[in-house]
Image (cartoon, rainbow, N blue to C red):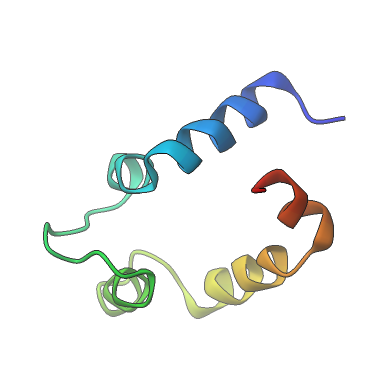
Length: 69
């Protein structure tokens, strides 16, 4: 069972993903597409390719997909 904190984070992310991302990462204004954001984070060394790969695996997980419906 997911804890309440994780469910709250998912809810916040669904309502305003840029706010949550900007609280952890330096993303310039005007970069809005997911692909451009990921590319910027990779180019600036804020995330690694391994992290992107892990996130993509999670994105394709049916259990994770249920949370974002």
